[in-house]
Length: 214
Image 1 (cartoon, helix red, strand yellow):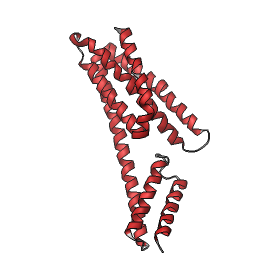
Image 2 (image 1 turned 135 degrees about the vertical axis):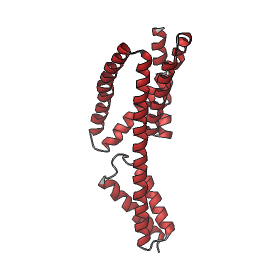
Image 3 (image 1 turned 60 degrees about the vertical axis):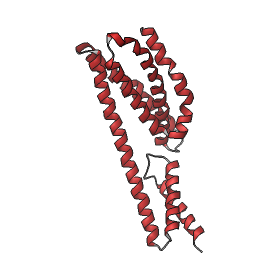
Image 4 (image 1 turned 180 degrees about the vertical axis):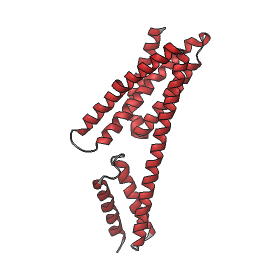
């Protein structure tokens, strides 16, 4: 049974990594990480619900592990590269730190805590605790994304108000705000106060205004 479980967990990586670039291109790295964490919650809940009469379900449930890991690894490495920005040589360092945190700190803490819960309580309790940790981590991710979205919306609203204060028509202001929004989406997501990003947005707004005004 253990060999089948290991095989099923590994086989799931094949379609996961095969379709990961397509998913990354269409949904983005943050959605991939959130999807991976949701799949991990589903997998651990399913494990906790297993009983001797349903133990054979461990094989199809284990297939989720490969998709979960491939999505998390692809999205996490992409986010690490974005955190580094365009600085030469930094992306590899940040990705190495991400890898060390996952396989080093995370794996060590998980094995220690999981082994303790397994020995002192039961495997069911171990998976239940993991579900709680995953739900908390997913909530932090979603709250952080909401805060970033609100800050960006506030910044774009300020730009529109500033454009309206200069007497620029609303259509031009809206076009400038939309252009700056797309510019921010293509830039580093984590470095919202980067001076180069702000300069690019101002140049975009000025270009749109100059093209629209006589």
